[in-house]
Image (tube, rainbow, N blue to C red; front, side, top):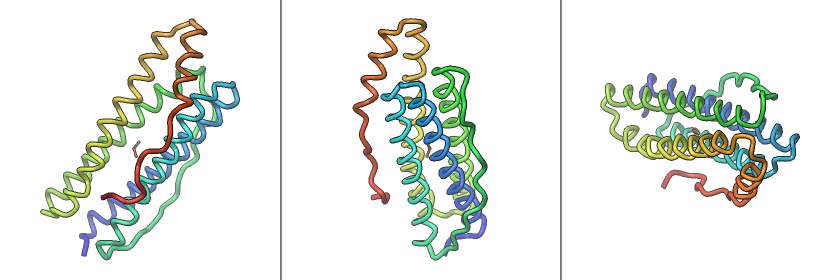
Length: 170
Ligand code: FEO
């Protein structure tokens, strides 16, 4: 049985992952509205991955005999000041997600819940990837500056992204 403190923290994280999914879906809609369809594709897949993250936490609470409690998901922004801004916001958001996952790991450590510590390792590794990938795209967008050809090249590259993660932690 999972400890109350961890159950509460993970339930909060489920809501954050669902918010992340909505945030990236909203960014996908924004990019589609300005015909940057590669960026829209990348964000849409990111949204799907975030829902999978939420489901991994959801399954874990149930697997440990806990109770899932899904709280309110606040509304996301829907407009951005230009095509670089969503990636700047996404990086900042991922840094917050990393900090929250570290906070849950701290609780698991304090509670000596080794199963949760092991479960969280997947997310700890995933956050390294998430920050790296988002940061790289942001850097490339900034480097492109006013060059439309660099922007369209990157947009074209991001069209190729496909969903990669499994629906359950292995
Ligand atoms: Fe599920 Fe992007 O953190």
